Length: 278
Image (cartoon, rainbow, N blue to C red):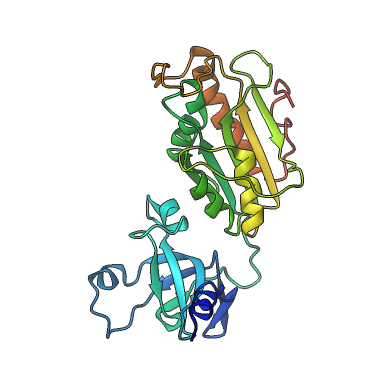
C-alpha cells in the first residue's frame, strides 16, 4: 500500500451510526459502559457501569468500529468533546448499552451555552463570568454550560455535536451604554473558513470554521454586553483581571436572561426583556 493510500484511509470518516442490539447509536446517544471481561485496563474497571455520551463513531484501518464516548458527569467533558486524551474513551459497539429515551418520548432540545472571553482583558471576561455563574444554577435537561475562555478550536468541535441551539455569551462593542445587554441571532455571511488563533476566540471565525467542518446548530444566539473597559492585549497594557462596575452589575441579569432562553428555546431575541437592544 502506498503512503498516499495509507493517509487517505486514515482520514476516512467513520459511519454516522452503528447498530447495537438493533438500536442506532450515534453522536449524542447516551450509553452505559459494559467493557469486556477480557479487558485488563484499570480505566475500564473503574468506568464499568458508568453512563456516557457518544462523541463519535470511528473506524480503524482494519475496518473495525469504535464508539468514542465522554463521561456524562465529567467536569472536563468539553475537553473530551474537543478530542483531548484523558476525557475521551473508546469501546467496541458490543461494549456499550444504549440508553435511549423511552419509546414515543420526545427528545429534549439540546442547548450549548458557551461563555467566551479573556479574563485578563477586563470586561472581555464577561462571558466567562456568566458561564461560571450559570454552572452553579439548576438547568433544564439537555442544557450544557461550558466556559470556553479563549479556546476557539474547542468551541468549533463542540458545535459539531447534535445541539439544536447554541448561545454564545461575550462582550461586544455596539455603541450602547456600558452594561447594556444585546441578544442577536447569528446570520453568517457566505465565505470560506477563517484561520483561528490558538489562543483567541472570534465568534464569527469560530462559526464559519464549524460550518466548514460539518455543522453548526440550527439556531445560534449571541448574548453580548457593552464593555466599559476595552483592552487589546498589547504588551504595553497592564493586566486587568476584573470587570468594570456596569458590566459586573449586568452579570446577574445575563444569567437570568440565558436561563429564560434555555427554558424557552423558541424565544425570539429581545423578547425576554423589553429594555434589551437588538
